[in-house]
Length: 183
Image 1: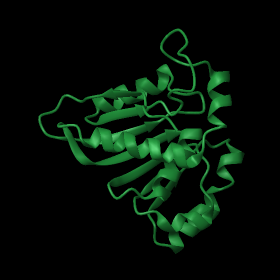
Image 2: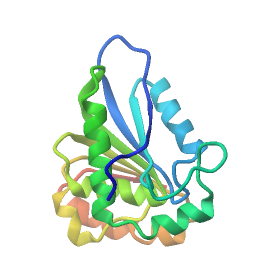
Image 3: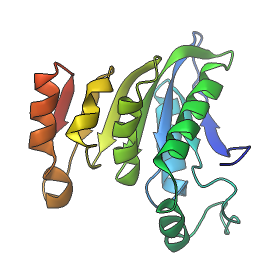
Image 4: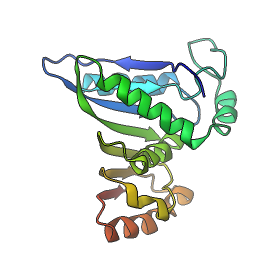
């Protein structure tokens, strides 16, 4: 693990305290696109924090980012426990900001989508929802700990990821867990 975590933090313009959204990057790392997603969430009224889950593992390339090939390689070496610790740390940091409410949601894309679903499994007590963009589901046996609603947004022609939707949906219904898959 690392002692420090880089993150892109964006604030909304609003008078009251804002809920927090942790934005989990794709396998390509904390890209300009992911920072743009955080910017849009702030424009929509949230405090958005996009942690660089590869902090301390590489030197920044031009444009304050990482190359896709380097990010993909490094992400495969991350431990799920370290990733979840970093997401929890990011959420705790953002929720402690004076402008923040003590609750958060998580959203992720592809690798980050799977990670977002795993954040629901991790069941932080202040997690209020997880959004999974085209990310695979965790093992059905791990779903029992989920306490927050999960929204899954999937591409119609994504056979690999979509193969897990039916069994996940059945298991979540059986356990009375809120899960809404949208294709």
